[in-house]
Length: 233
Length: 211
Image 1 (cartoon, chains in turn brown, orange):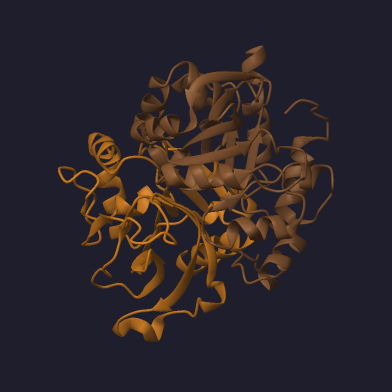
Image 2 (image 1 turned 45 degrees about the vertical axis):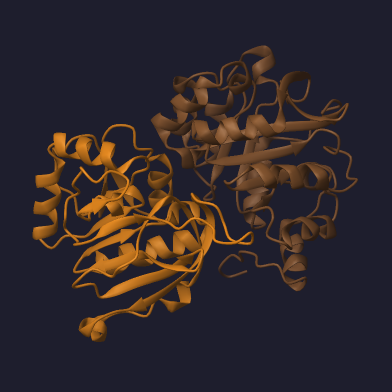
């Protein structure tokens, strides 16, 4: 996840994706944990005035209060990674306070020396925790959804990380969003066709390649995948 | 017309307020029941027991019952729908407002690999239809059939008495009822304020129909 580029104003981009028929927006302050800052609530409260799809927000959440700030600004779900690794109790507290359905665990994983490892701080720091035990612990703690990213594939466009999807599916009994390596509709189809994964998250494919979500959905529909179509589109 | 939006402890009402503004109505946030409104909305997320007890500790139950008794429109969204009913398996010791008779059950776990794991997070197809003997006065909502955003673990599966319109959906092959309309009060399990342009159109239609 190094080599991060500035791709534009988040509010403008979100508006464009909403107009194109995106099903959900995931908004991450990718360096929030590193610099211990929180600027997201301000962005979200602007965003939700004109965007009427679910917003999942994350980055730097380290307490119920910091999650509350995002919910109050208009986020529907919050996404946690670094602070959960540092303090797994936080997941239990968040789930109790806001309900499992609004707590998303972000899992950045990579296969290293024969083991699936999870990473914090946007893929910078490897933790000693193994993926399978982390997934089991998280579900026990009351996490409602998983946002899985393949560190190896992220930003490469070289296709989804199928071994990662396999292992996550084996250990997870909650909805899964997968992201990383996707650069064409066939990649998306290959992950969604067996209903293994509930949703796909796209970043580079949209921001850099300038792909239109309306076109992606219409291609997927032709391939036999059920997609949500906006009224009047 | 002003839409009063009930806000009691913790419920996130920002997105509902924004959606109501977008479709052209003014809103008043009601932290306590201190003024009368033309149209009442009760959004909500979280645990049924916690919310039912918070509601019970407030002065809202009587206010809501009087509002409904006067024949004025009322809308419960998500947990707000559940609170219009009697009970939920999420917390059997808690009691809702009991405007509708009925009980919310946990949505079913997957029976096979291609089925989904609860909670129900995401878009599900909803079909709207009239119900019961009052269907002659019902309005056709079928043009609004489509995908709506859900975020819940408990659902209604039996149609309550006196209902004239319903929405039907399913989760892991089990039929659920995510929309009920009786007299001038409706309950919506999904989030129209989070279901794109279709959601806004639905919300606008229902408000127009009831006001």
